[in-house]
Length: 98
Image 1 (cartoon, rainbow, N blue to C red):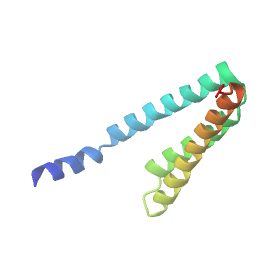
Image 2: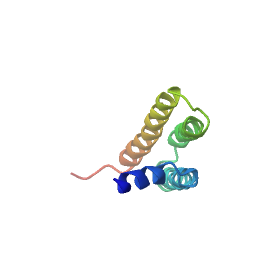
Image 3: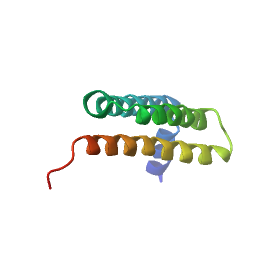
Image 4: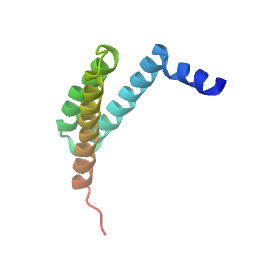
């Protein structure tokens, strides 16, 4: 009975939230930047990511009602779209020989 309760407190740690969101922002941005600089030179994915990530931060830290779930879900979909745009641009730049 104690383990689930301590586990729940672990997930409600604001420092952990800032850390995980900050690290994921850096990793996501660097992945998209690498695709932009080394492969396709199309800024679309970075622009989409730049719209989605602040939306995620806003939904997570500043909206404190049921609307936050909608905002976070939409922002994650936008971030995923940015990575798909990048993936497709990298793939189209270097087509597979198969």
